[in-house]
Length: 68
Image 1: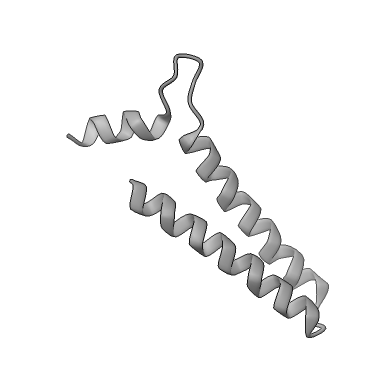
Image 2 (image 1 turned 180 degrees about the vertical axis):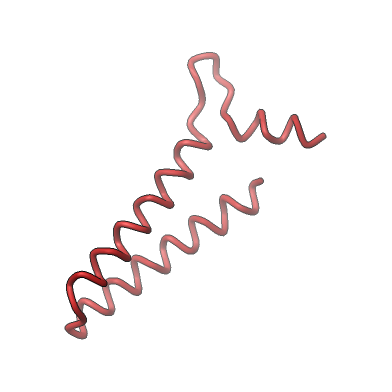
């Protein structure tokens, strides 16, 4: 599961970098905004999976416990 979260973060950062480069080159604003929104959604998913509940256990910890 940690590998998946790592890939999501790297992909989100790549999308943000690509959106910035497209914006600098004068690409259509719609494409740039959609790339930034997708990156934000990916990062929000990572936060949801890693943010602990009130009892201190994160959903990613529960998923890893089920895999074993």
